Figure 1 (cartoon, rainbow, N blue to C red):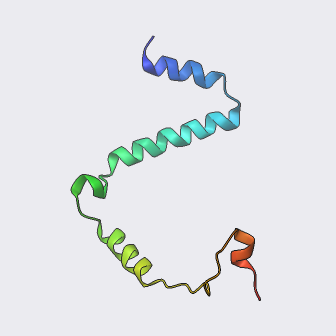
Figure 2: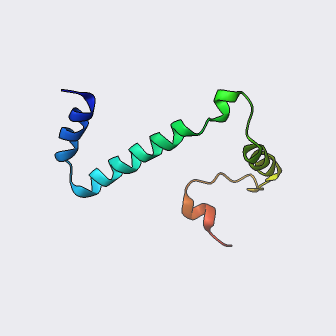
Amino acid sequence: MTLAEVIYEKSRELPEEKAREVIDFIDFLKTRRATPSSSDEGEPQPQQREALARLDQVRIDFGGKPMLDREAANARD
């Protein structure tokens, strides 16, 4: 049995929702393979450099208090 046949047989056992997730994952893998990543080239792409520069400017003052959960982080005093 080929690998494609094994994938097909296993996918037949999944509920439809999970099978759709598998299709999405396969599409993601195909897209990732088609576009070279920055790690392949050793240098970040221009969009990545811009995003990293913006993130570098973010400064958040928590007032020395630890944020324990999402609700605490979003609480308005």
